[in-house]
Amino acid sequence: MSVGFVQRRFASAFQRFAYNLSGFNKYGLWRDDLRYQDDDVAEALKRLDQKTIDERNYRILRAVQCSIQKTYLPKEQWTKLEDDKLYLTPIIEDVVKEKREKKEWSKNY
Image 1 (cartoon, rainbow, N blue to C red):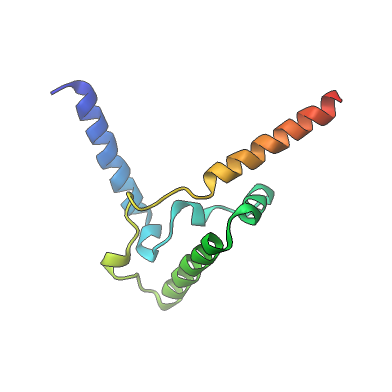
Image 2 (cartoon, rainbow, N blue to C red; image 1 turned 60 degrees about the vertical axis):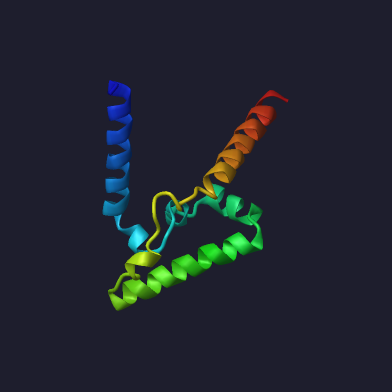
């Protein structure tokens, strides 16, 4: 057994442990649902399709309802690390890159 395999396995186990410890998965939320809504996030949300926005809003409203009732979702509805996808992060990275390019362009021309 190689050291690299053990390190990857330990990192994976630690990542799963930290993900479950964070608690937002007990409400059915995804990591990108937790982003603070600044200008970049607002622009990225404008670029999402309506179905994805509706799914995001449903997850957030369901989490708020659970929080108000001081309950969690049933365990089978918790978000698993494997199911959690970063749907907003790539778009935010594009927005930031475009802003940087626009700033650089206006500075040079």
